[in-house]
Image 1: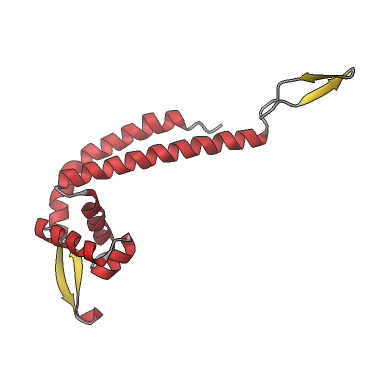
Image 2: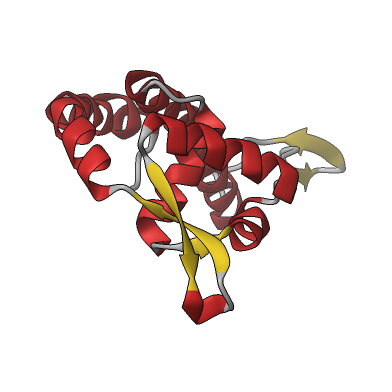
Length: 153
């Protein structure tokens, strides 16, 4: 922001501008944008680490996570939710089924179509082992990195 000028005795004199409300909002928006970008990067890396620990790629892990949240849905519904093609989803579900994370079943409620549902036994066996470490790392992140970069005053 350019400093405002004052005219004194016919001469223009530059003076410092105190931060206005607009510049405070801009500063806060910039801080929030930066924090959001940091959180986004941390989230991607976090989910990549989870996927690796589970022996999955990131896409397969997030699809399995969607199934864990929704319960049984068709490949078409999963494709719609993810933006992937049905062909790509078939490959994802094949890999998840082979790894024991989902199972395919004919669902009479939807005209006998195949649906995929999460294998709760497989999820519960794998996730608790990692959870305590992730909780500790998340707490550390929020107490250090995030709080250093976002100052609300």
